[in-house]
Length: 120
Image 1: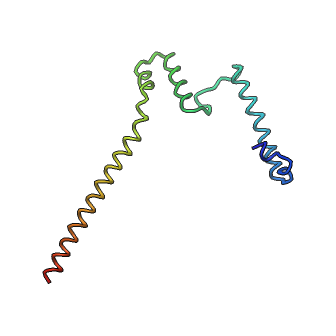
Image 2: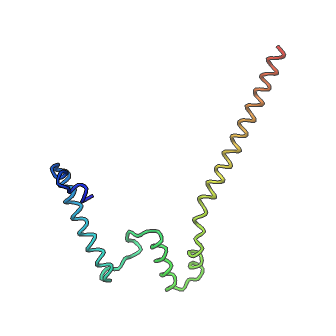
Image 3: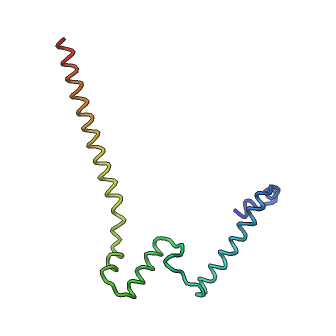
C-alpha cells in the first residue's frame, strides 16, 4: 500500500499522502515490536494477536509444563475440526428429507385434486 499510494502521481492527492504517512508510522511500530519479540525482550502472551496454530502450540507448551496429560491428549487430537462439517452434513440431510416430504405431500394433493375433478 505504501508503494502503491506513495508513487509520484498518487501523492498529488492529499488523502493518499496522509494514508502513506499513517502506514509508514504503523510499519515502524510493527518493525520495533517484531525486533523486540525476536530478541526476546518482549514475550508474547496468550492474549497477543497470534494465529490459531501458534495459540494451540502455546497452550500445548503450557500444559506440558503443568503436566496435565488428559488436556495434552485432547489438544493433540484436535477432533474439534470435524464438528462443523458433521453438523453441516446433518443439516443438509434434514433439508433433503424435508424437501422429500414436501414433494410427497404435493403429489398426494395433486392426486386427490385429480380424483375430485374426474368424479365431477
